Length: 58
Image (cartoon, rainbow, N blue to C red; front, side, top):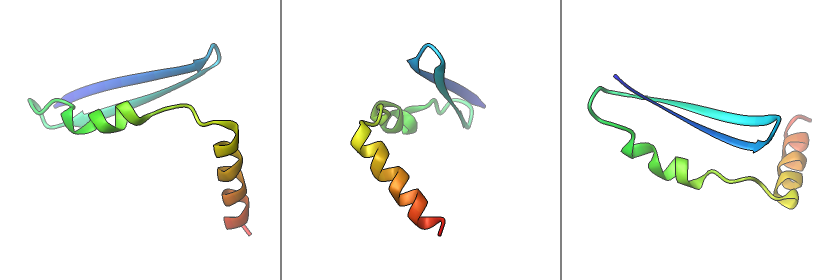
């Protein structure tokens, strides 16, 4: 079993971590696109998501 951990710190009080588990010897290559695509959302993107979530809860 291979275990890889990636952590992203957006601010002193905000840290996100991801644990990826794969079959031993396979590494984490299949997760590279996900790891490289993570970015902080802009204010407009965050607002759009909040609106979509509030609409879907009704």
